[in-house]
Amino acid sequence: MLIRRAADLRYSDITPKSLYLNRRSFLTGLPAAFLAGKELLAPSARAQAAPAPIPNLVKKPNTTGEAISSQQDVTHYNNYYEFGTSKDEPAQLAQKLKTSPWTVSIEGEVEKPVKLSLDDIMKVAPIEERIYRHRCVEAWSIVVPWAGYSLSDLLKKVTPKPTAKYVAFQSLYDRSVMWGPSQAGIELPYVEGLRLDEAMHPLTFVSVGMYGETLPPQDGAPVRITIPWKYGFKSIKSIVKIKFVAKEPPTTWNITNSHEYGFYSNVNPKVDHPRWTQATERRLGEFRRRPTLMFNGYGDQVASLYNGMDLRKYY
Amino acid sequence: MWKSRWVKPVIWLVCLTPFVYISWLTWQGNLGPNPPERVEHFTGDWTLRLIVASLAITPLRRLLRQPNLIRFRRLIGLFAFFYACLHFLSYVVLDQFFDFHAMIADVLKRPYITVGFTGFVLLIPLAVTSTVGWIRRLGGKRWQALHRLIYVTAIAGVLHYYWLVKSDVRLPLLYAGLVALELGYRFFTGKLVRKAVAA
Image (tube, rainbow over all chains, first blue to last red):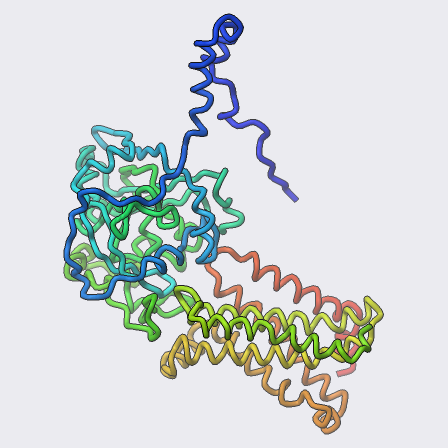
């Protein structure tokens, strides 16, 4: 049996070069040691901010025509396999997620790759509220008031090259606080992807908050993608990288089981999961199942993206 | 110690505790964001646990030289059936709300439901014939042969669980391992082999 042990030393444990070079000054004077010491402390300064109200949030009407799900339910019934595979674990275990400082790198087939801090991300566009239906592949659903802006506002900043055809996303993978692949049963870091036109669609959303507050860790703090017409696992949490690519990128659940989870994963009541029906769903807070809507009810806006495609083949 | 007349009521109460607990949560409206799923998973878990426990009796009797353990096997088996009934009912009522069309489609089309349903149906004759009267009527040999259906149910139950899980299969594999040990013990101590040859 292979027993994996963490290395005794991490890169963060290694003495910074400046401190090493200045080791003599530690003896001769405190100032240098103080400066170097600050550097040593820096890695552990990563911390997590508790959900806080989002200022200047632009409220929008609820166009779903449906009741918003209870915040308690939405924040205590999560799929976030890096923090446990049962629904109630992420609300506990994800509290260890360190969300500050945070950097999102936008790179790949672009003219101007950038690294954005969370402050930068918050300033890309006015933060507005969007109330979306959210349908999990496991046949449960919720209605969530997200806070954020269209992903296209962010992607326009980097000027994609003509060779860019897809956008790949990557979640944070911090092994010091997260489960490993052998426990989660999926490869990590979590990766997702969209066709460029899907990514640029105005419904595709960068979420930085929910219920008027910044995101709680179990729902993908500090920044995630929300795609309301696709099964929930496409809406990748806690993103650190957005990469423009020429070819269809690998996606986590497709890697795990390509027979059951396709690249597109549009909500489709006519194409069942091999193991269960997708014709109906249970809305959290409701007793009876309700019929699932094509493209989760967003067909008017997104069906044209898939004209001429066999959605049975491209599930 | 197994001979004490207090042991059986204690085991009976232990087996009933999960039912009291889930009833209490239901009464308190404290089943979490997805109550039907919670009840389904809870009753399914306890069905499987008690099936594993009932299958452990025979190996434990011999390994621990405690033949009196047999006194508790019917009790545990019947409780397994009790939780299986609750599990089935929670599917019919809470999950599907008597949508027979959807349920028939499920049983025919979804392997995990097909095997789960099969395992449940096979438990019914075992529960019915669990009395002393039925043992007498069938005769020991035939009764024993009939009750070997529990092996099929145990395997079906594990498969049912394994096929339901999305990616973290550690718990289903644990149950698979336990059932494999229990059936393997019977096989290698020759009980199954001898019967197979005789039949």
